[in-house]
Length: 230
Ligand SMILES: [Zn+2]
Image (cartoon, rainbow, N blue to C red):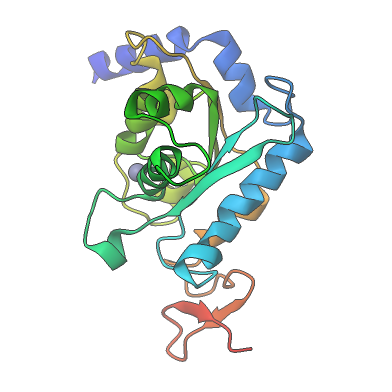
């Protein structure tokens, strides 16, 4: 036990001060982007659920948007993604991976707006910000670092997901980012943005008394939420 306590203490001490400040206060203006702009894109990550999956309350309610803020503070949407495990059978298609895949297709589409080569598309991620309504699992956090994103912003934390009954691999994004210092790119990490709006998408699945997300209601047996009929 003693060694695990020491390891924890070491990690706490080695957390870069700037990273700790950003994690503590998502209201800060980072890279010249205001809090209202951040919240706009996080809300769109929530809305991606309804736009792509067709339901505002899919069980795996993980939504992502990828945005370019480098040309304007407001940012331009490049692509969206949601968890595609259930409808593709591909267990690695978490929302973030699906979004990265969608963006790559859009950036390299020979008839599209960007028409980039593979190399240009890979380089383009250095200008992009990924917003996800829940903290990425270590697979996705690693993919975000491999992609070389400029920024990564999440809403609901892995700790909250675990507390509310979700099975998770207990490695935080902060830990993944800290361990990726050998990579040539650097990414800003902002956590816990707009959790009052992202948390409700993840708190109903294992708590039959928690209200369904807006636009949804409990199924008759109370075990799930589904889109309300209009
Ligand atoms: Zn993931």
